[in-house]
Amino acid sequence: MLPTYYDTFFIDGVWARPKGTDVIHVVSPATEEIIGSVPSGTSADMDSAVLAARRAFDEGPWPRMSLNERTEILLKIAAYLEEKGPDLARLISSEMGSPLKRLAAAAPMPALLIKKTLDMAKVFPFVESRQGMVGDALIVREPVGVVGGITPWNGPLHLLMMKFAPALVAGCTFVSKPSPEAPLDAYVLAAACEAAGLPRGVFNLVPGGRELGEHLVTHPGVDKISFTGSTTAGRRIAELCGRDMRRFTLELGGKSAAVALSDADPKKVASHAVARGLAFNSGQACAALTRVIVPRARQQEFVDAMVAEIDKLVTGDPSDPQVDVGPMVAERQRDRVESYIAAGLSEGARLVRGGGRPDGLERGWFVEPTLFSDATNDMKIAREEIFGPVGVIIPYDGGDEEAIALANDTPYGLAGAVFTEDASRGIAAARRIRAGTMGCNTFFIDPLLPFGGFKSSGVGRENGPEGIAIFTEIKTLQGVALQELE
Image (cartoon, rainbow, N blue to C red; front, side):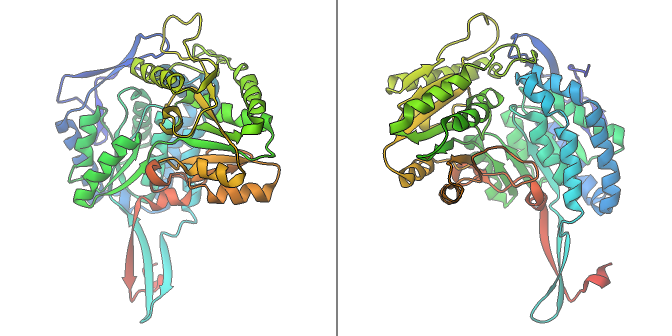
């Protein structure tokens, strides 16, 4: 079993005592019991972490190592995480409530993200030869510098690795500020860095709340902020970074649509819209397919198919390998989800499944998988991100044009999917929906492909070669040929 109680941070390659006395208690959302704790960082603790990362970047070996040298150390980190994979899955499930059924299948992913990023780095154009108007030039992609990584609770280690792996591969140094709801898994990454012999200051860890995150965002020693979280917080980070021209990448909220064209198969739509919608991480996923847009004349077919899929779901203790839907991460999150269900009822949507708390689960912050039909796109449940196991069926009367217009009638643009038996028709519709990741008769987030959003769903892309590029700055070297650099 992995530790769950810590009294130190990881700063400058050592386990450092906190400068304050506040403690973050980690509470199981399934039992409402304290299962761990970490110290809560102060601004002074964060200053120490940034200073260590700054020194490691400006003076240390990491940015000046060859890719092969960095690869050797990063593969050791991957091996450590791979060994701890099953225990990590159980740890994450206990701290934030995601079903172990889902996490166990994803247990290899943290290590795999490092390995796949290293594979992409081998062919990434860190140095590119070009011919300018007056002679030879090199386009060099250099590490952006000190990265502040701020990550949420809903996919804590996975989302941290989407930043950590490409940032370190690119030669950056890193300061991690994980969510106070789920900080424990980040300590396992810190232990992996220590065991692998990562140079001092390259990775630093200081958990804390919103104020600590804002201190990191505004710190003059930080070159780039990489944030995953709410759109509200992302807007604030963009404002703060803009003042100092600090680089930033934002992966934010979503209200993604599963669009059923007139010939779509209801069973196919339902299988994706439930598994990758209201049941996706218990609905606590930014890319979840939470709006299901269907032809009005066939709405009942889609309702019946969705209900059949929902009725297969098992809600309960996330450590049970048979459970599909776990609790909300905190009591406040359950209250939020329940307020949206009440809003859906008051606005006139038809409740066809769920809407309450599951029977027999007196402890824990559970909500029944819930489905509304006969919704309109101007309803609160159709426009705002609920972040819980709630799906909304929105009927349309016209053809593809109306379906596409409804899909685009949202402030978000993170993801979505189009379902049809006509492939060319589906591709044409998907191309017109303004979202960063679109599926045609399928939907998933592929770690080898760029992920990010249009509009209020964020700025920039993670994963794929684009995920490495965001941690680099482009420098033009004039009058230099490639052979001279080598």
